[in-house]
Length: 246
Length: 246
Image 1 (tube, rainbow over the protein chains, first blue to last red):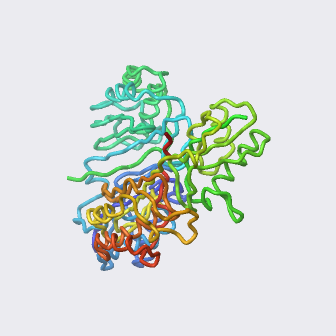
Image 2 (tube, one colour):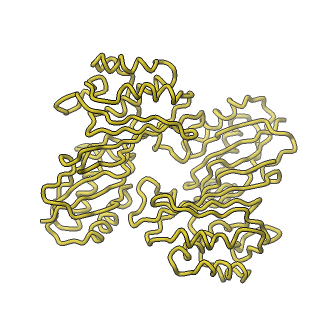
């Protein structure tokens, strides 16, 4: 039995999310079915994070145990051939120690959120960005974002379906910058609550439009109350960038 | 009658190209049909360049004459609402002088070609890049590209269907650089021959793989013979970046 680490890029658009679901296609299921066809086994793929429907990944990490003897090359190329035409690509397949766990060994996660901030809707990046037609003040958003960095009770920014034991998380980074017509928001933490990035971005967009002041972000955080929340930014602007291991 | 200048982004994937065709959808036709529905007129849209099937545009320029009184806002928003769900977006609509012609007033055109150079196929950028799995030497490609800059007879890099009067063109810029897994090729000239960028990129890829030496680019150019050509790079990696006016 070999434990493998996989690094996976995917377009979240056609999927119900990373995790296997009763009611629709998932990235996990697509990978497990490809691996089953390759090996004749029924391997379970464990990801570093569970992305929601429509959320993309530039480099999701996962592990899987396989009995069949495979080279790194054969595993990567085989899965990529079999998952087609679904928009999933195994970037790397590497041997991992037997106690290496994609989720529990992970010590950091990075996300990117892309807002297209111009009047005209996206043609090339449709399904890849959140289109906000009203002008956003990226500087005010950055000021609001700074108030969320650090160790806090993030109850305000947590989904009702969140399964985390505690709402207390340490947000290491939440940077906002404008690049041309795009506003890019980069978030880093050991782990995130369910919907945390999208709800933080939703509130920052209210700040960007001038509906909230940057200080209102602090007030929403301190309220520790989901009803203090603005709204969740939509999934298609969100990218799981990478999982970090010791 | 008002002459308008339009700036248009599009995903070339679903189209037979910019230009109206008998046998399939085109960007020009989609725009003309939207404008006809808005105005009750039959306006002809003239582009700065004619992109091939599958080629994208970040900012194509075009002009159109319309009798109906419209604001810039109304024209842009109206076309964008009517072209949906086709991946076309009017970024700007501005009044233009009566003698301004998108094609004949244009004094410069810029293209970008994106090669994804890694083993794994693209998941997020499928249809947006040329995937080359074998490692490419960007430095050697840049050396080969430098031999094409300047005023030359580009017969070697010209399609059999090219309608240009002369094969002599001045290539102002052909820059090759690597950014992570991508090789980006930027080309600028007053005008290009049909398939010129794609055939130059195809030859540069042969250099990048080591099948050609950089000097073989010069030999191909000097041969002034289409049979000296390597091959055309595929359309989905090519972007019309912008048209330049005095």
